[in-house]
Amino acid sequence: MAGKGPQRGRAPQRGRATVRRSTERGPSNAGKKSPAKGLGGEQVEGRQAVRELLIAQRRKVQEIWIASDIDASEIIEDIVQLAEASRVPVNDVSRRVLEDQARSEAPQGVLAFAASLPEANFESLLVANGSRKPFLVAVDGVTDPGNFGALLRCCEGAGVTGVVVPRHRAVHVTPTVAKSAAGAIEYVPMSLVAGLPGAITQMRDKGVWVVGLDDSSDRPLFDIANLADEAICLVLGAEGSGISRLVRERCDMVVSIPMMGQLGSLNVSAAAALATYEVARVRAVSHP
Image 1 (cartoon, rainbow, N blue to C red):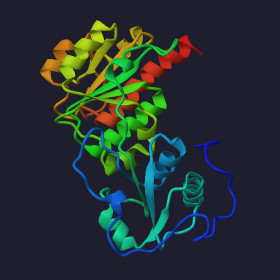
Image 2: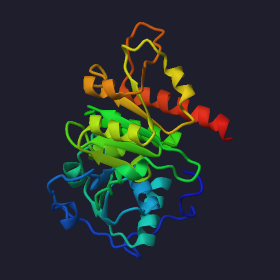
Image 3: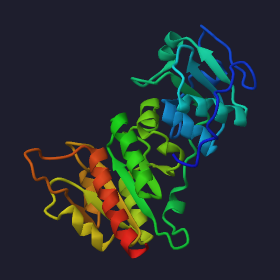
Image 4: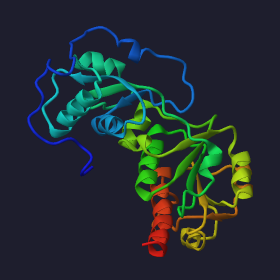
């Protein structure tokens, strides 16, 4: 991201300002597993995700691991320099130890241990921030971590002001989600709710229009342009099952993405990209 990183230059010499050590043991206290609570996000994997974790400075980072055989690159230099500036230990570990600890398919030789992601207050997401009306996305039954991470990346890019996630029967922020989101988890406020139907009722009571996406609807996605400039929440379900009956019944409008080819649907992250940017397009025209 232009303008966010440190000055480019020579890579810092290992063993100087940043504490670095080689280990063949398991992680320190920072990496010990604990019962999953809240949103998660304690283990972040992948170069871009770890870099954004350090840039955002939203939560405490306890430790970073870098594979001892990793090739030099600008983003690795960035990670080391950012860690030095925040006094975060950066430790050399063997590739085998790092990959044994990793929980995503390709950690890219970098992982970090951090405090869990803070949960956003649900009620605060329903209130306008100055002239910026709420632009929310709620997920219903999304359990695939790669799709959820990609969805969060779309939300961050489109200017979504909050993501609503059910506390149960939904994926939260696993290492795979964090890697797929490429740093978006550090910037998009997320709130856990006990149940999505009840949360939708609260949204509507606060004047938020709720629009569900479902393949069975006869109304096209583009109909949301009429509501995009208002406080709005888009509800997306998992590919195949879509949004649940109880959720659909509580939506103000249900729309579908027109499919011009032979396939009947898109995965949830692709649907999120189209829907969120349709809202963003209308808002950009109204408030250039």
